[in-house]
Amino acid sequence: MTLNNKVIWITGASSGIGKSLAIELSNYPCQLILSSRRTDVLREVKQLCKQPENIAILPFDLADYKTMQNVAKNALKCFGKVDILVNNGGISQRSPIIETSIEVDKKLMEIDYLGTIALTKAILPHFIENQSGTFVVVTSLMGKFSSPLRSAYCGAKHALHGFFDALRLEHEKDNIKVTMICPGFVNTNVARNALTGDGSQQVHQDDMTENGLDPNVFVKQMVKAIKKEKFEAYIGKFEAIGIYVKRLSPRLLHWLVLRSKVK
Image (tube, rainbow, N blue to C red; front, side):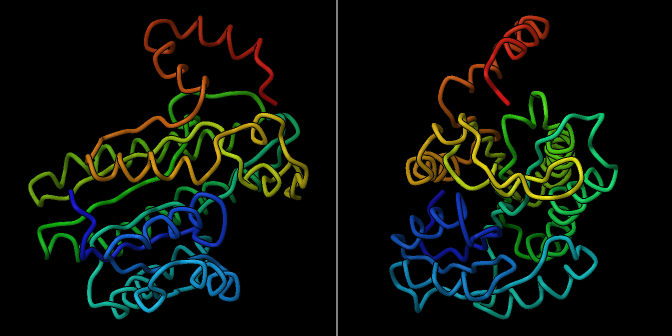
């Protein structure tokens, strides 16, 4: 798939993977719609991109999932169409299950799962009408296997895989593609912004996240996966091997994760 002349909509574009992806894609002859909650930060990202005249900003909050029909309508007004929706926005969590309020589980599901699928459903009729479209979904390796202290996050990411696998099957006939991007550790603020058991932010960085892939390196591999229309892409360092270990022996993966330094 070529990205030339495509309109690409990126959620969570104000920082981390989304910001780096916007800057990387601005090298292509395409048009971008950048979304997150903060207009001021989106404007800063836009100015870091090449060809800012080909970039629109559309702030909204994924937690307001009941408003996504209007959000999609506003996105279509930017350039008249959307060819690729990159569902990248979301939050993480770091706390033991026993200490995690059910309100934290609810918030993770509302933002990472319900917000994402509500936006997807809002733009889906446009893709069907055009008989073309691609959903790129940034989940996580934690959407394929789990690790301690991330129960709400893992649950929401696993749910995304179930939903989008079904969407891919239902809309093969409409030439609609789905690429699931599964990052391992990427050096972003995801850990600092992660919710703890009482709903407050963790604030400090995880060692594994600090030593993860540079987001600029990550997005180059991500773009390759999008172009190749991969069903799933596992992008990380040594942790990506967990995908294959689980296929071989879930018990072995359990043993390895228990003995790892993942916190």
